[in-house]
Image 1 (cartoon, rainbow, N blue to C red):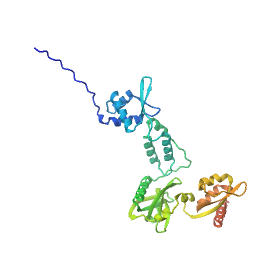
Image 2 (cartoon, one colour):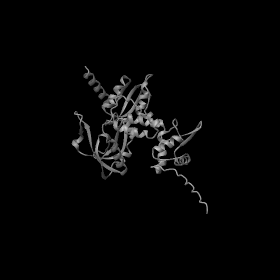
Image 3 (cartoon, rainbow, N blue to C red):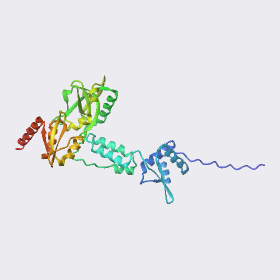
Length: 342
């Protein structure tokens, strides 16, 4: 009688986890969230973290997975220390100093609400490891900062960009605050119709630069004070006017974004303030010596009381010498201030 051959035991297969198909995604997530140049994980630690995600893995397959991630573009670095090999993510799309700069900008920007600031910073934190994210939880101290109360500004900016790209006119309503701290519509709630041409950020606020066909002029509007923005199925107007419009020169001439008549003003300035003049009006301004302590210059400004206030703030180190109409206006404002404080 022939001997019965013993049954060979079947090769034991590794049990697959509940989320095995998501293995590469979880592996990338663990490396991106848990590691950086100062923090790394051993193979055993990575296997344990994958297990918590419902994924089973072994050393052999993980070596191949790391190579796949490198091919995909992740900078997976292996470092030998004693008997262990440590793995971490090296280069990322954003460096930590770059993200710190972005976080500071978000926190200090007046036009971004407190709520949106926190949301944006939380999203920026997701671009680094959880260890580095602690360094992004910064507190920028900005004197007198008043955050915007209008959450719709982000959607307004998007709508305006869409209208510009579509070459369409827009309509909107515009508001201001009244003495009761209530939103009050300008023009008794009538629609504003304009052709949007660009957006600029000045004085910590977003402004729409648009062409007003009724008055054949370029105007600007605070984006956070615009309501119910919608496009009109009409082609934009004012292309030639906007092409002739010098945005940098326009923004330099404005004081507090108040509109006025563009005027060339002559100033006599103490030499100590040459840097102030260059910072405000640019290096192209003329600097002509008057004596050992003073120079004279000419600047283009949108003449308004805000410009006069800026001159007042510089004290006796700046004097307006022309034109006569501006000098007279300055004298009148000075007298008014003196009478106010008598």
